[in-house]
Length: 315
Image (cartoon, rainbow, N blue to C red; front, side):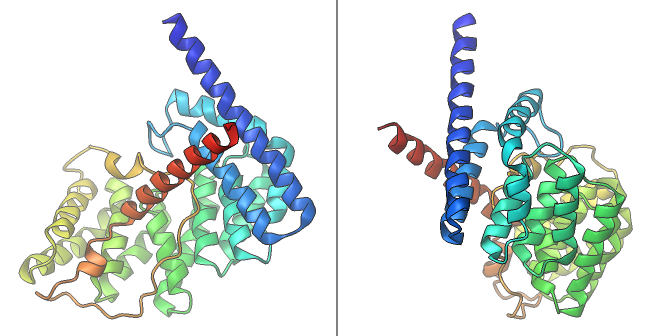
């Protein structure tokens, strides 16, 4: 047992050293001012952070081991917190999104809160908006003000002016509960005839549990439509589970979704340009892409990339 603890301590020490090394690389990139190099350094830093933080628990209900890892990460990146905050305002949206993601691992403070809130409220980038909401949740900075902002931005889906951004926030709300957005999510269920956005909204409502009970009639209506029109069985099962959770027929947490969440940069969402109706015809393009699948894929890809980078560095 003692030997195992020593091994674990050495492993944690090596991972922390990797984070510190990537922080040094980020400082060099910032001094050079090249957005491409800055983003590469930010991605490398996020990879090191991902390797140190275990994924043994949901992002919003971390285990003791995950909390300890986060504390060590917070201490490591504290010296560059101000630089990260400044990068979240970078005109290069890729840099802004990646730095926002990294900033979610910083110790909570009013400066971090203001920077993330400002991006969530004002950005026109779907990626930056989603990363800001996820980072606020990870940093333990969610409150009524943030939920109100997120709900307002999700409501922009109806105007179509920022529908991509709004739908990306809905995807994020499947991992970060936003009770204030219940009405906006119900509107997506009611007003869009494409299955993709409606399933995305249903996943966000499912995360609310009994707090999303107002959506029950629309969820039941969607399930009937799917069953009558030969919808994908996975979508039908998802809606059945959502109905169970919001109607308090089950107290089982949505572990299969939330435990896979990480704060890796979220890829751009697909534009909702192709109309897709509920009909017996196949809808594989949207119905097969539940929002958590591409996040899992991103996490696995980043983990593999991180392992390769570390091996190369050790040679």
